[in-house]
Structures are given as C-alpha cells and as structure tokens.
Figure 1 (tube, rainbow, N blue to C red):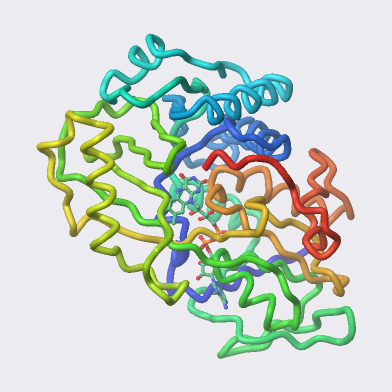
Figure 2 (tube, rainbow, N blue to C red):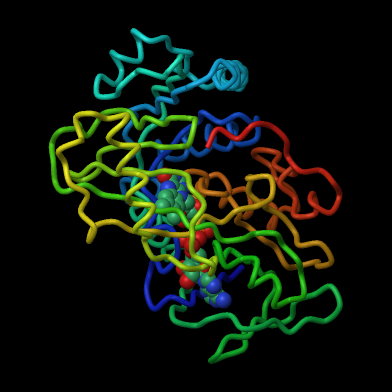
Length: 359
Ligand SMILES: Cc1cc2nc3c(=O)[nH]c(=O)nc-3n(C[C@H](O)[C@H](O)[C@H](O)COP(=O)(O)OP(=O)(O)OC[C@H]3O[C@@H](n4cnc5c(N)ncnc54)[C@H](O)[C@@H]3O)c2cc1C
C-alpha cells in the first residue's frame, strides 16, 4: 500500500499542533476518552523507541479543582470511572493534599479536587516529528504546499483528490484537516460537524516563580488553568472569543485582561509577573457537538474516511487514533480498541456521546 500525505502548509506544523500547550491526561469523564488516553500512554512510553524521537512525556500530574459540591461530585464520578478503566495514580484530593500538591494557588473558594499522577506534559512538535520520521522510513510521501480544493467522486467512491496544482488518483482518502476538516468534507458534499473554536494562551515574561514540574492546575468554574513551560508560565481561560470569524487566530486584548484577573485571583505569586504580549498566541480547537473525536467512514462513501474533531485533545490521543484508523482502513475494523462509538454517523443517528465534559 502506498500512502501520500497532502498538506496545504508550506512546511510541517501549519495547523493547530504547534499551538497546543502539550498536556496529556487520562482524567476524562467518558469511558472512550479514558481508554484512548490509556492506549496513547502505552504508545507514548514506547514512542522514542518506535519513532526515534522522544515525545518528552513527563508525568507531572494534572490537578482539577472544584469550586462547588456539584463539581466535586462530577470529579468523584469521573475518578471512579477512571479507576474502573485501569487508570493508576488517580484520586480525589482534599484541601491539605491540594496545598501539598500545588502550594502556589489560593484555596479560598475551592472545595476539593482530583489528582492524576500519570497525567502530565508532552511535546506536540516532537510527536509530529516522530510520526513523520517513522512514516517516511515506511515509504510515506509528503507533499507540502498543496491545498485540497475538491474531490472527483463517482457515487459512493472518491476517485481523485484535487489540489490547486494536481489531481491524485486515490484508493482510500482520509480527511485529517484539523479545524478545517468540516470544510474539506464539504468539498465532497459530506456534512461532518467539525468546527473551529479559538483558544488563546497568555505567556508571562521569563520567570522561575513556578517550578517546571508543578502539576497543571485547572479550576473547573471557568476553565482557568496554568503551567510552566520553557521558563514562562502559560495561562489559559475558557472564554468564547469575540471575533466573528471562527478561523481568526488573533489574541484578543479583552481576553488577556480577563486571564490576568483570574491569575491574580488564583495564583497570588504571579501578581508581580508581567504578561509578555509578544509571546501570547491563539489557535483553533477542532470541536464536535459532543466534544469527542470523529473516526470512521464518512456516511454515504465507501472509501472516504475522517479522523479529527478531538475537541482540544488531538495531540494526546493521536498515537491511539492514528493506529486505530490504520486498522480500520487496512483490516476493516478497529482491532486493538473498539472506538466505533466515534463513528461519523452518530450525530445523524442521535447517538452522540453523553457525559459531563471536565474542560
Ligand atoms: C491553544 C491550544 C492548546 C491546545 N492544547 C492541547 C493539549 O494540551 N493537548 C492536546 O492533546 N491537544 C491540545 N490542543 C489541540 C490540538 O492542537 C489539536 O487537537 C491537534 O493539533 C489536532 O491535530 P491535527 O493533526 O488533527 O490538526 P492540525 O495540526 O490542525 O493539522 C491540520 C492540517 O491540515 C492542513 N489542511 C487544512 N486544510 C487543508 C486543505 N484544504 N488541504 C490540505 N491540507 C489542509 C493544515 O495545513 C494542517 O497542517 C490545543 C489546541 C490549541 C489551539
């Protein structure tokens, strides 16, 4: 089987991957996401050996913080499910434990939390580099700087992929265009509900106030979270963007002010540390209606597949989802882990994946 990757970017990493902050977690509230994380973790631990590139998976932990009893009950149910699925080192934590795990946060307003010690950090661009190096060794061809502009179809078959420069005959086609995947599916007349959602990151001026191995800490109320990366503190806050254009990736001044306010409230030690406006960035999540990935054959087609819509978790789940998609195409089924619940047809069939989304 010969494989060709066609990417509109002039070089590696034109999409969201370089803009990811690099978190890995198994603390999810749906069984399928927990199992994808466990499978990915298994692969991350062997990634360097398999690809030749170290993904720099550091098990620093993730600390979720509840501000209401209801949020804490959600975390408790999620932790029970995670344990049932085989996640190790995950537990509900009370105030004294929280203070020991992260002594840098103000606890006024926090009622409890959950901590997962095998969660932590990965390097998105290292993972991308590893995939590319390993697949090149297997003979995969990469074409950069060609945007897919259409498909030649015959009934249920995609016969050719059309770019601005060439037309490529295709046996099977996988749409993995990230936040643009909904648009790309539309070129074949298919409706796949993957939509962009801007997410912004504020970076402080260089500082050693927060240690590099401090667990990523997330407040469930509004999704404010922070971590150290490369000598700066990264601050994030889940707020809907003001920009009307869903593909806009400019950092919004009002958002920076809001994240500053949250940082001042929850991380008092950071009050004297400036945000470096030049170092802030924004990128696009690839959202689906139920915040879970879409993996499978596009309804109405025999050889057109979609892999995407991880809704902000696409780097951490990429080792598992990539392998599973290869199994589906080459063997006709997901062999290692049954993720048929991620089928693209679930939305039309009323089978969206339920559950509370932690963030
Ligand atoms: C601020 C931020 C923080 C994040 N943090 C994390 C995190 O901590 N952990 C995590 O797991 N995930 C995180 N994510 C999500 C993660 O970045 C994405 O889930 C992941 O990068 C998706 O990878 P992808 O390869 O599917 O898409 P992308 O990396 O976006 O790649 C899509 C590719 O499709 C190409 N393309 C688009 N249209 C066309 C076309 N018409 N023709 C040809 N090529 C095309 C683009 O050039 C691009 O190279 C974060 C995202 C953001 C924005």
